Length: 173
Image 1 (cartoon, rainbow, N blue to C red):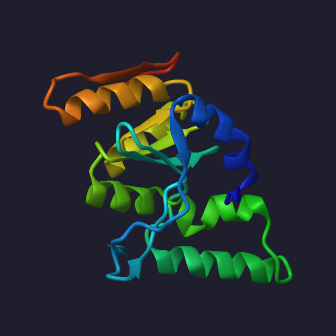
Image 2 (tube, rainbow, N blue to C red; image 1 turned 180 degrees about the vertical axis):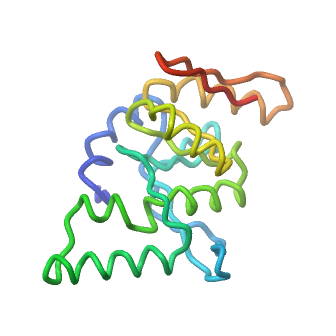
């Protein structure tokens, strides 16, 4: 099975334990960034029983606000590095790792159908940034609970998801 990153490959067994499988297709819709530019998206995993797409992120999301802004920054980084990019550059600047992109995708599909799942808890500052963007998220450790809550919410039941960290409490009602 081909993965988009080493991190996804390493996490695949953990997702499988939660009933999620690798998803290799693009969504059947176009998404539009703030500049009106269309883009396509593909989730990393899919939980068939709960019908939820999962975007896995082993690190924080970046703040590139449009596909063009991300492409321009990636180009300038490549020029700075003599025509090549590092994995770190991709995480810091690529559109695929943008909080704005994930927000657009989640808004279009709905938080009951799409979640960003982080390897570990975001910092308080990161969590506030995601909240400002309207991103609903969970962590690998809280994925089982998140999936169950979304399953019940899809059926009209008033369950809420709550994640408590040493720094903050995050909840989705």
